[in-house]
Amino acid sequence: MPIITSFYGIIIYIYFKNKEHNLPHFHAQYGEHEGLFDIRTLELIDGELPKNALRMAKEWGALHQDELMEIWETQNFKKLPPLE
Image (cartoon, rainbow, N blue to C red; front, side):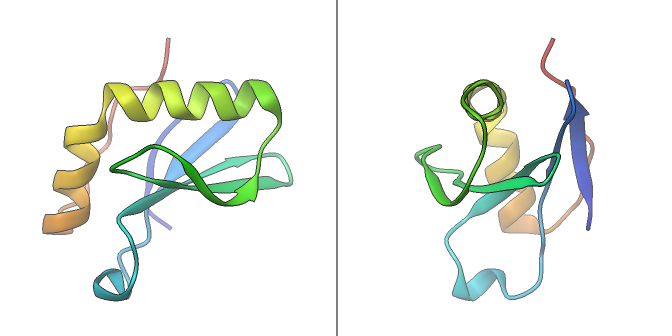
């Protein structure tokens, strides 16, 4: 799994396999919890995260939304800065 970034125990990654059959999304993992976020709306579309991890993942996604869409569309992996 290509890890895009990590911060405060949250790991953000994107799978490139079968992207044509899925909504553009990224994964956020926090301990045993995992959530999938729609890149376009930043809404949680599957899974669950604790309240603070959910808030931070959405905040980070908002800061890097354009870059995430570019990564999704081109499948050119690159690391992004963490939430600070």
